[in-house]
Length: 134
Image (cartoon, rainbow, N blue to C red; front, side):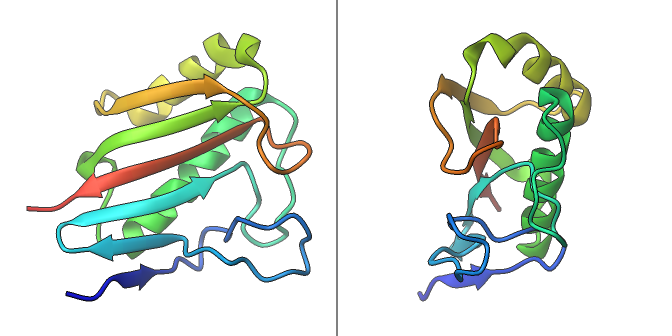
């Protein structure tokens, strides 16, 4: 069974440090009943610029970008079983979690949240996920 590359026109492709360089990554890969979505950040899909320095706005944009890739793969957050979050500043966790909780509207997932340094200046949150199908 070959893997299927999933691409969303409504989400930016990440994995670059220079905006003019093509990404070496797929936005998502579906293999069998699993969909793996590459880490998304708070980038405007059209400009590939960071939307804001506010962690809550960054969180909403990051989740919106994930949602776009999930949709392109035939899924939504009800299919997501796991998310991994990287916060540049762990002190942002309470505000991040507030925005995350509101965006997810009661949908439950497993999640790991760590502190680290996302690859691009100004990106304060990055999230990837795994979705499952019947």
